[in-house]
Image (tube, rainbow, N blue to C red; front, side):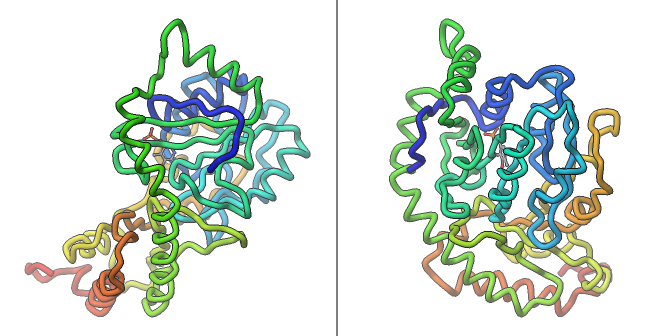
Length: 330
Ligand SMILES: *Cc1c(COP(=O)(O)O)cnc(C)c1O
């Protein structure tokens, strides 16, 4: 499926990212570029090894790392770029790789949210120097915990082995976990295809809801994975209803909808990171990302997708009342 030279299973996606950074010899004082809207553990991994996260803004319609914003962020201290494909969106890898080549920087590609996805004609995680998967509890492939790192570079694999096998395995994925994963791996391609078809369908259905925009896809020849299906909640168009109150009302209707990540610059002291941007879109994402959890996207019944839209319409039609309930419930 990946067609890569070296595959190293480990304890979690978080550990895999840490090992990838170590495999690239990122160390104290080095800078790593990453999106200001990303998984918190990625930021913390950079701090763990003594490096400095440098935050880059995201694109306006897809809310993925904006390759055009890398130029402002790069310095002589930059040692690596870390990109994550999030919420069914895809980072523009051709542009990122062009920038990386120009500056001779390695790229870690976090595909934890989309194992088996195709991004611009290639398996997610194989554009970069190192790719990473997670087998965490709620992920598309799960062993309760676990992760995977893959690369075509022998030097990276060798250095990662030094950390991951210190006499015994230091960050192991157990045989028992692997046994749980194998049948899931067999089903992955088929399930990804079903999820992608349903995601397309859902996108079309959601066009009827004002103020709710699925993240756009920027790359052709792709089939994203959907650990979460991401949406932009355009706060100004909801009669005072907040994103969080909307998500709560949707959950009351039985829809597994949640707020997304917090943007990294908003939950960490400015002493911990550097940025060269205003992070305007990351500010918006912090307040407006909604994520739909993946199980619904395996449905074989169009009626179940319609239920999501019906619930959103109902809340939309009563937005002011939901925002300011008169002592009653929804
Ligand atoms: C889940 C996730 C991780 C980390 O995976 P764990 O196995 O939970 O440590 C890393 N990056 C992203 C984007 C994720 O969604």
